[in-house]
Length: 126
Image (cartoon, rainbow, N blue to C red; front, side):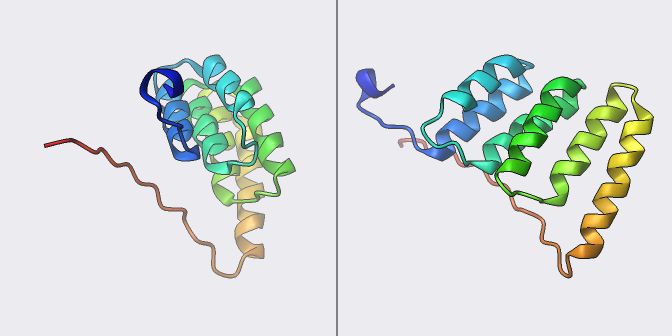
């Protein structure tokens, strides 16, 4: 993209690619892409990968992503809910219920939890 179009992608572009790869079920490829990013602390990209892990029940990668988010000091309740859903889809209901307890504890600790808004844009030339 840089050489062919002279366009340098921004963090949001990479986040969209990770989301698209995840939705397509290409979780390992999405993980390799996020690992190769110049910015390692983009929690929204990591959370998009965690969401894709939930959809496909990929527990091993979901746990890796959860650890990365914890290392980035991102204790957003969505992370635990997504990992809990991953366990449930994979049939690990005991682990899922443990994660739900963790989410409830996090919600109690936060006085006013805020849900992170998402957005997508498409620019078309007329």
